[in-house]
Image (cartoon, rainbow, N blue to C red; front, side, top):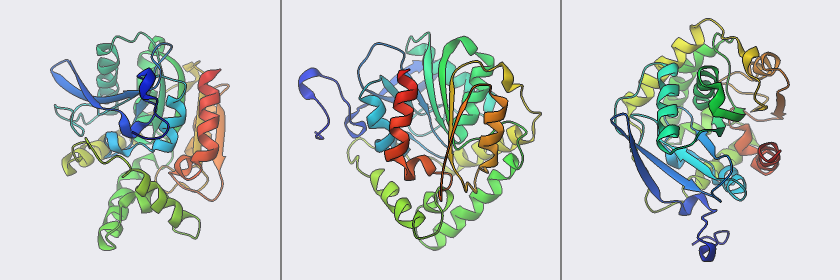
Length: 288
């Protein structure tokens, strides 16, 4: 039991202690974890490319779960969830809605990173009444500049990582410099803090299908994001090679009244590198 869990009141506040559960909906068994106090509007986390439940940084999840009901899940065909991964972002958004409704929620906050941020945009455009607040990190809009080049960068960095026997996220999420390299190692180590009840590894086929969906999304006509009226917090590092940082500014311009936080000398994983600064910002935003 980690130090910040309170077994006496039955509330799990450490992500590493949250048991993996399943819920059936639409012929799919969705794997998910939940923690934090129940009641209020839950925060649903939408994860990145080729990621499962074990890919969330506990330094982001735990501070939010101290005050909010937090739910992470594997979308259809990802990790321990059954079914086949859809090859479109819109279908992924519909699956996320199916999951949310299966848990009985009429309104949620969404915390999304990278591919999750793309799915979140599709979801809020189609189901605006379901979403109260949006946190979009390391992501970009449909039709955004170079959004369709994500696949090339991803394959290149996975190859680089394989050759150096390191985790691809060290290349994809962080700058390869004096600050980025130790931040990358620390992040990858944090993801290993949970030792029991780990999730099923993501298949190569899942990655390929998700990349196909991102490419399609990147090449599609820009959606009218001015219809998003939900309070929105946008964050990234200033040197995102995977989803260019300029796309966060693009999102900020398109979503009226949104807030933008860009962290210096950091990449796609800027929110993880600066978790000590970002987590309180996210908590304050969700509490308002």
